[in-house]
Image (cartoon, rainbow, N blue to C red; front, side, top):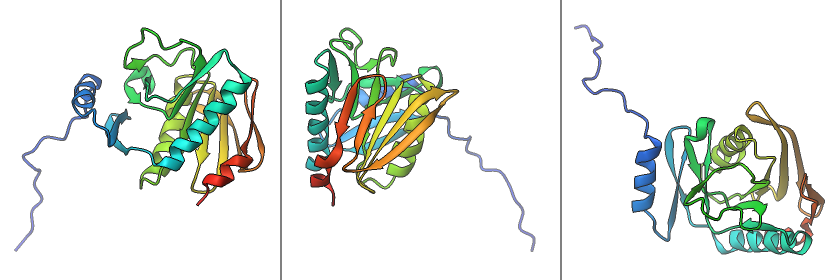
Length: 198
């Protein structure tokens, strides 16, 4: 008896469009998940834990003390990313001039954003999402700095100099070092982050 290969009668799955994603994201607005859309695929993020939120509050205090003319938006403002703005993410933090996001709606244009901040979560896809895909998406948008607070290895990574869809300057320092957010005049003393290490 010979086994014959045949094609499935099903057609290949089409990727979700941005418009379809936005309808789903609006309908799924709940307190325990956040939806994002990168590389044509919808991703689900769980709500951050208390240490994650404490890290963002620490960063907010640092930014406010040094640059009162800038806001670190940690309210879940959506951002259009990816090539030709076909992606949608909700960064943990967006550093921009005060009132920058007024009138931009749920999904803002990345122009004018000085830095994007992410603090890793304990999700299984953190490596692919936070360390790879988002770095590529933010660089492709021309966002000057991507600051990653990595709770897996207790480090802060500063991605800078976006060129051709990637950051050319990447510096990783452990908690306790002084970290500068390029182009902002903000210098972070990261020793306090040791309090949130597991």
